[in-house]
Amino acid sequence: MKDEVITVQYATLLYDFYGSLLGEKQAEVMELYHEYDMSLSEIAAELNMTRQAVHYTLKKSEAFLDGLENKLGLIASYNENRKKADSIIAMLRELDITDDDRNYIIKTIEELTE
Image (cartoon, rainbow, N blue to C red; front, side):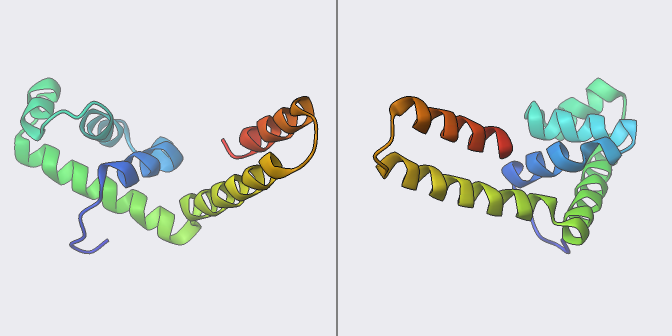
């Protein structure tokens, strides 16, 4: 992640996939910043921390989670599976099968890729 800006969308995915591996304070800072869109100053006031401590905690947490993704690749795998599922669903929509069968297959695929 060196000097790269992590987007809110990517950070949210990181938190969803790996957030349970963070310490309590790190998880709280990540959640307030990325999920609740609070500013560093607002988080500092909420958690009785300095703004600088919040910034440091946020960047360390993001770097840690990004490192996990680089090693484990769960988000990349999820995104690839989602693309494949979307492709299969698009093909199913073109097949000459009953609506009930098509909907059942699509629902099953979507459940597998949640």
